Image (cartoon, rainbow, N blue to C red; front, side, top):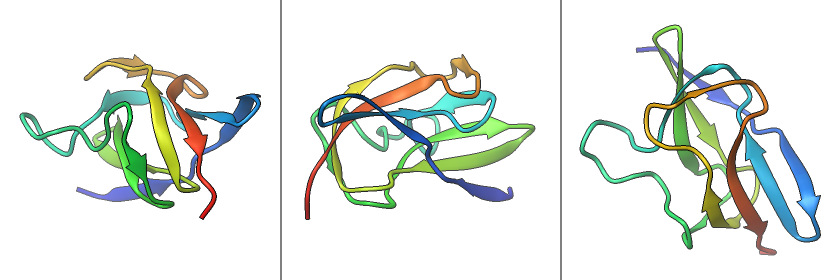
Length: 97
């Protein structure tokens, strides 16, 4: 399967937190395959460029990655939910390196 790396548009919603939004329309997958653990969970600290989920669009699995090191505060979407462009996926707190 072709894999497209989607860059994350991030919108600051309140001081020190950022919402990671979907860059494309598709189906949200929190893990790399059925039965596998999710890429991230609430409370996890992830590095810049780390995959946080997959959005499937037209049979293409698009890895969604973080732009900066951050802590996952909230996961807004459940497995296999259809999402639209700009739907919120995660609330994160950036961490200075």
